[in-house]
Image (cartoon, rainbow, N blue to C red; front, side):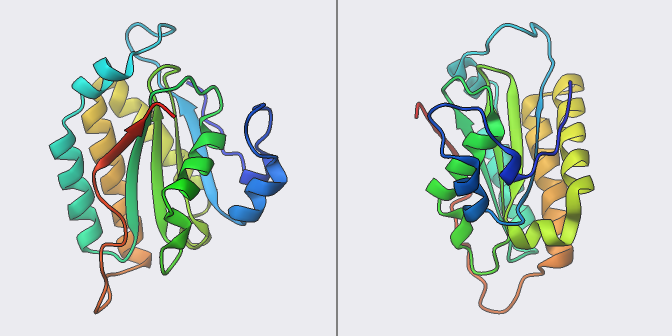
Length: 191
C-alpha cells in the first residue's frame, strides 16, 4: 500500500477528466489523499456487486448519522462501479456532482471507493482542509487501509467516518438551526 497526498492542482493523467487547472479552481485549498487497499486476492479486481454485498450499509449510514449529529459538517460515501486508476481525480469530480462544495460552511468530506482497482480517495472541502492539514488525510488513509486489511471493509468505512466526524465536530460543532444538507446513504453508480 502506498499512500500519497496530492493536492488537487497536482492531479493529472486521466484522459477523460478535466484539466488539473479546472479541478484546482473548483477545489482551491481542498485537502485529499488516496491509496490502494491490499487485501486477500490483491491484484484481482473486486466486482462492485460482491463488494456491495460485503458492506453493511445500515452500519455505515448509522455511523454517518452519529458523526454528523455533533457537527455542521457532512460526510458522504461513494462506490464507483467503473475502473478508476486515479481515484483522486474521480473523487473530485464526484464531490462536485454530489453538490458537496455547496455546503454552507464548505465542510464536507467524501470517501470514494473503487472496488475494481482496489483504490480509494478521501477528500475534504476547503474549510476542512484548512483546519486539519495534510497529516490528517494521510492518517485517515492509513487507518482505513489497515482496518480494511485486518477487519472488514464495513469496519474500515465506519472507523473512518468516526475519525472524520471527530475532526468535524471539533472544528465545526453543531450550530442552532443546522440541517442535514446532504443524504447519509451510500451512493454508487456505473458512471
